[in-house]
Amino acid sequence: MNDSSSDDESVKSTGKKEEFQKGEYMTQAVMQTVAGLNIPVLNAGSLELPDPKFGCSLLFLGSTRSGKTTLVNYFFKRHFQNHISVLMSNSLNSDAYDYLKKKCVTSDFYFPEILKDMYKINHETKNHYEFMTVIDDVPEERRSGDEEAAHDLS
Image 1 (cartoon, one colour):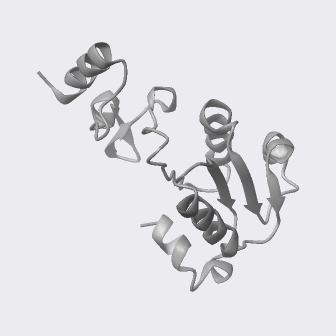
Image 2 (tube, helix red, strand yellow):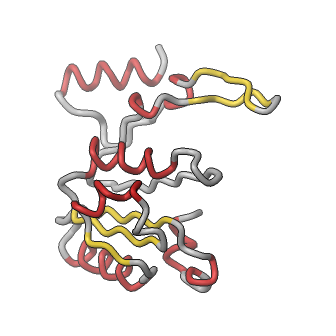
C-alpha cells in the first residue's frame, strides 16, 4: 500500500488527515518533454495545500508572460480568498493584477517589514490569522539583505 492510499484511509476513518501527512505530488505528475528534457508536469488543479495550521510558501518561476500571475490568481481564488492579503509589485498597473487589486492591500514597493510583522502577529497569537503575500516583479536590489525573503526562497 502506498502512502497516498494510507492517507486516504486515515481520512475516511478519522475524518481528517494526519498532522504530518506526506504529499505524493509527483505521483500525480505526467512526464512531458520540454526543450528536450523530460520533466514532471503537475496539474495545478490537483495540488492540495497542507493543513492551514502549517502554512505554506509557493514560488512560481518563469519567463515574462509564461503564466506566473495567472497561477497566482488561480491559487488565490481557490485557496486564499479569506486570508489577509498583501500584493507587492512594481507592475501594479498590469491588467493581470486586476482581480488581486480588488482583494489585496497593494504596494508598488517591497516592504520586508510587512513580512516580519505578519510573523510577529502570528507568533503572538498562535497562528490565529491567515496571511497571504504576493511578491512579484520586485528587482533584486530591493530585496538584497532581506533575510525573510531569503528564507522564503530557500
